[in-house]
Length: 141
View 1 (cartoon, one colour):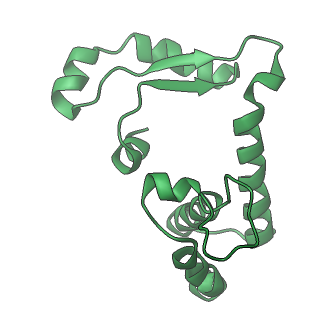
View 2 (cartoon, one colour):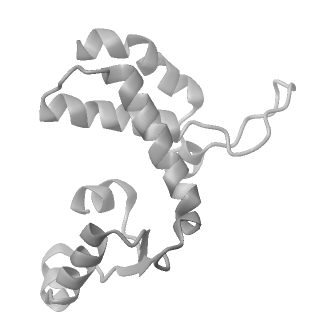
C-alpha cells in the first residue's frame, strides 16, 4: 500500500471483493492508531468498501484488469521463475502496458490522439511504452 501511495498519491477509498484476506486486513486497519500513522507518514485514513457477499459481478471492472495482468504475466513468464526484483520490474512493465490501453474508440484519423489511463496518471504517450516492450525480453532474460 505504501508503494502504491508513493507512486500514485493518497487514495480516500479502496474498493475490493469480499475475500477473507481483504476483510481480515480491514479489521487490522481499524485497530491501527491512525493519528500516529498520519503524523509519521502523512498518510490519511483509507476507507475500505467491499462488494456485497455473493455478488461477484460487482467487481467486474477490476476483475477484468486482473485478468489482463495475468495474461501478460503468463505470456512473458510461462513457467520461468524470476527473482523478486525482476518480477517487480515485470509487473511495473505490465502496469505500463495496461495503462496504455485505449479508453475510447480508436478512429482512423491519425490527428486524433487516443485517450489512455497513462495520460491521466503520468502524461506518458503510447510510444514511450512500446520502446520498452520491444526490448523487454532482452532485459529480463
